[in-house]
Length: 94
Image 1: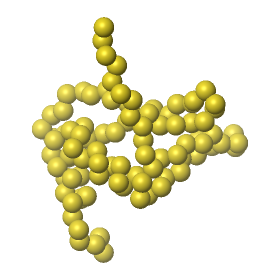
Image 2: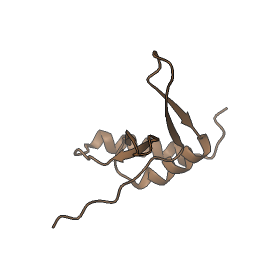
Image 3: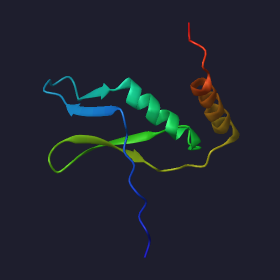
Image 4: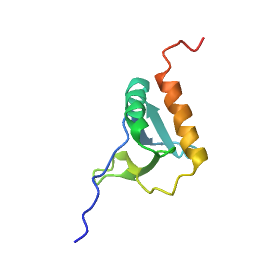
């Protein structure tokens, strides 16, 4: 029997339905939580983190990580290295 992968969820991203017709969804971002989570994902070779917004049985929206993994090429790996350099740089941006 095939074993299912553990589900992973986004951290620092919060999703809410909107009561306005012209707004599909509201996304709240806790900057500190998101930065810590993204830094923890640097060991992941994927350049992208895809988040599927889903609705729980109680109606609350949440983000589940879509773990589909296409083959990475050398440019993708360079992009990951560039992102890691940004997070590992301690110098202030200004």
